[in-house]
Image (cartoon, rainbow, N blue to C red; front, side, top):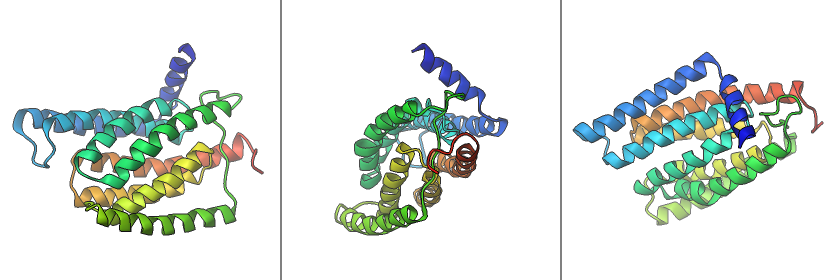
Length: 242
């Protein structure tokens, strides 16, 4: 327990001023939405109790994404909390595909990733894991899997009367690929996170939700930062996949 707390402290110390700024913006918007919902009602259709769930999800989500972008192992503590609360939101709005992804895939994968990241710690920066990169043919296999599987998921979600089947299908499929790449510590996870975050921003513009729209915009920004950091980490800290 002591080592976990020390790693969390190191992870927070590793954050930059602009990451703290984005975190404060996210927390502020989520807090305002929650207070307004309980005192004045909510114009976006979320019940008051769901805005409280959104607040927890927003806080844990941004901390998780900041830590993950720096390859910090402590990210999975906040990832589990974020996954559970986000799944509640998705189930309420009948976004079935992404909800299934959160419950049946992200939760167990978070636990597995936590184990594998800890097993491959950086020898000096012990709060971080080691980073790898894919070969070209491996990237092509990932792309083919996404296209074919997204089409299959779309057909299923249409039959389930999903709200946004194409957005939902691609979010689900890309999420699977990105999470597996994250588990295996490949920097290319961030190519897919960038794509899925763009899709998610579009989804929350179409189905407007200020808290989750802000959250996904921050995720998109951090996906670019994560790609840069993991690339640098792979080049400077280890060459285990060369």
